Length: 173
Image 1 (cartoon, rainbow, N blue to C red):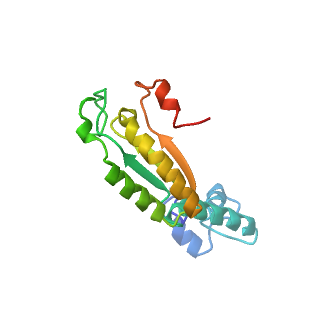
Image 2 (image 1 turned 90 degrees about the vertical axis):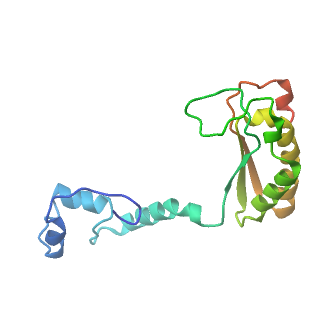
Image 3 (image 1 turned 60 degrees about the vertical axis):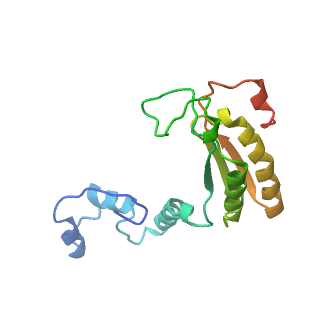
């Protein structure tokens, strides 16, 4: 495996052939190794730029702090999907919604990230069942993002089963 996470299965003895300079540079194996930046020769300099881009892309998430912030605003859901990982509560159990104090602290933690652009993703349960919590969070997050000069993306991860006209007010076109 190379620095970019690419790999290639090679015949036994390939490394020894490379070390002994016995691998034919015209062979398919050599060209595959070169294409994936395992070997370099005089014509490899453009490939080094490709490798640098791959490595930079692969490790970009490690620079600049946490960019994705998931807010589980409720454990309530109107479905009981077998594949769901959430400790589901019935749709009427509002005590399983995020409190304003927790929301304020979560927004503050998100804004403390050194990332210049952050994504606020609402999840649940079904987050639209706690739409009042979403309506509480969004304007506060937008205001704090403006004050701190951060770009803010907002995502709602929903099954859309309970969408109605009131849900469009917080997401202007």
